Amino acid sequence: MVSSAAHMCGFISIFGPDQQDVLQDVLAGLLAIQHRGQDAAGVVTYREKFQAKKGLGLVRDVFEEKHFGRLKGHLAVGHVRYPTVGLGEDTDVQPFWIDYPIGVAMAHNGNVTNFHELKRNYFGERHVKLASNCDLEVVLYVFADCLARRPGTAITAEDLQAATREVFARVKGAYSVAGVIAGVGMYAFRDPYGIKPCIFGRKRTEQGWWYAVASESVVLDVAGYEIVRDLKAGELLWIGQDREPRFFQVGTSPHRPCIFEYIYFARPDSFLDGVSVYGARLDLGAALAKQWQATGLVADVVIPVPESARTAAQTMADHLGIPYREGFVKNRYVGRTFIMPNDKQRRESIRQKLNPIKAEFEGKRVLILDDSIVRGNTSRQLVKIARQMGATKVYLASYSPPLLYPCLYGIDMSTKREFIARGRTHEEIARELGADHVLYQTIPDMVEAVRTAAGKAGIEFCKACFEGVYPTGDITEQMLTDIETDRMAASKT
Ligand code: AMP
Image: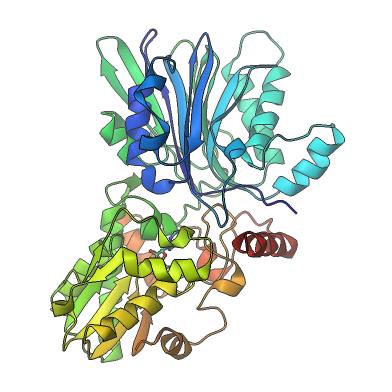
């Protein structure tokens, strides 16, 4: 079976004043969300026709000055793609667009869980052969097909609502989408459960209003847009030729934003659904400090695994009244260890990526804090390095609870079998990792910490990777097995 290329990703779409080129803002925005995907990048702009530039690699490598003259237009959509296990194909690089029967460009962030089924049945029956392994293609076709069947000639807000409704009815999973309709306007819809983020902003220049939708608020910040608001779960935003932003509540499912965005994925300077990612991480560190105190163990220093754990390590150290120290220095030019195709390469590259400062370990009881432990490769290496540097005790803490279940909504974690916490007690995990003790955040503490940062008492999150409850309610054992088979096969390539 061919795996669908579903990834954690980032997007931005812009509708600028007539005759203006929005490319610079799109590129600034993509650079700001490069952390959401380093595997591939692409931009599609519209002026009289769609123009595109897409490629594998970082934004700064894909786009060169020579492309700027060609990528004209006041309507555009851009995307960065996150690598999965194995290598991505360049045919799968987003955004996608079609010119017929209607000009639509589209990018998404998320994962379609019934991609294989749609490919086999819905499209198969219609003799449609998909051109890529990217699940965005099915969203685009269902959407465009419905728009093409609209009753009138003009494209109206009702047509957009009907198309979004049809996507929600046919396409399962979590996907936030942004894009443009050739020469007409810009649309975005957030996935039915709002698992993936999607935020709307605007700015005004002498030429008029510029509108943008993006995966994270930081995109709007860097391109000079003010935040208007996050889209709600299942909400459609449409800005047509009259340039009036209009919101429509199409879906009716409850809002379940992904909690892992706050833990690891989003930039700390972003706000997701009005919640500061930085604030959430501060609270997560403080919550874990309480847990640590309850163990009765004593540490001399808190050392974060850079970058994501730094914020939480500060509050953890503050609450414990012990120093926060930078014990590991990250070489930011080495790619993410996670994406190395096999375990051996992954282990070796961790040492290249994180080099210790001996003085921070020698003769000390160190508490190493990471945002999460997935396979345990990072932690195992760091414990070993800490001991080599002369630490007398090495404690490991994770400010997220044990990761146990695969994310089916686009965060590439691993298969069930690869989670180190799966089927092991905390003592066994500590032994596996060579640590003197392993401390995890509890699920209630994690939820409470993010809720506190949000000032939203009742907010519920998607926390499927921790507890195996998938909010879309349509995840079958077969889908889990398919994903596992896909990923095991891909990791061998
Ligand atoms: P591992 O070495 O497999 O235990 O992975 C743990 C490391 O991967 C931690 O340092 C996390 O910061 C990082 N991490 C967690 N989730 C992800 C993800 N979905 N993609 C990439 N890295 C991740």
